[in-house]
Length: 237
Image 1 (tube, rainbow, N blue to C red):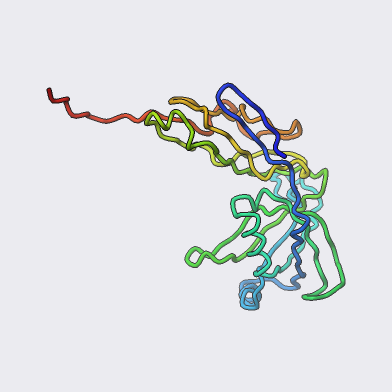
Image 2: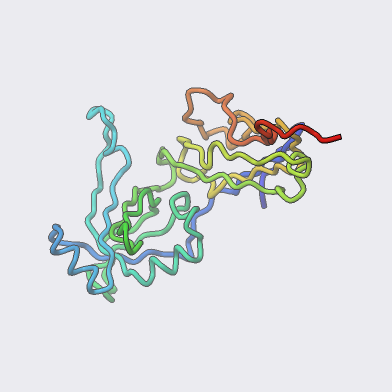
């Protein structure tokens, strides 16, 4: 089910907060770090990863929470499968179960919890995943998350039918909220937008616990711009 809000010109939907319990990431600890160790792990089909509390990123040391930092590796094949299933744009706005085992194939569970991916490091040339960064995202944990915005209804948009063009100004919005209320995506229906129509940040209605991290909430996230012809040729009569 989606939550649905209707405005004068748009319909805004936020996907429900979701934890992909059927995707449990299996990881094992790394005792050593460094480029050589990481290269060896990648050669063995594993991806180096780290998970910690997001509070560790706070600039003010007094605001930092206990890190629960774990240096890990995950199986590349499983991570690829998860990203394909969830779809890449929504990977970093989806919570997953994480199980840290004593070793590959071990039944000994060292630690488990819910995590949120926050960064994927890729090789610039090949695009292969080099490293993954997660934060603990257990229920009640306050997190900052960049939520993707998906635009729907372009094929029915009257502004586009009149010759305007669709301009995306923000493809995602940053929120701070409890982990359990993180939406996987925000859908904006632009099927009613005419030329010069726009959707503003404050038009997006989300769970009351979600705080939009923007200094100017009246900024548009998209608009239908008119098409202007520079130096038009004179009409021949």
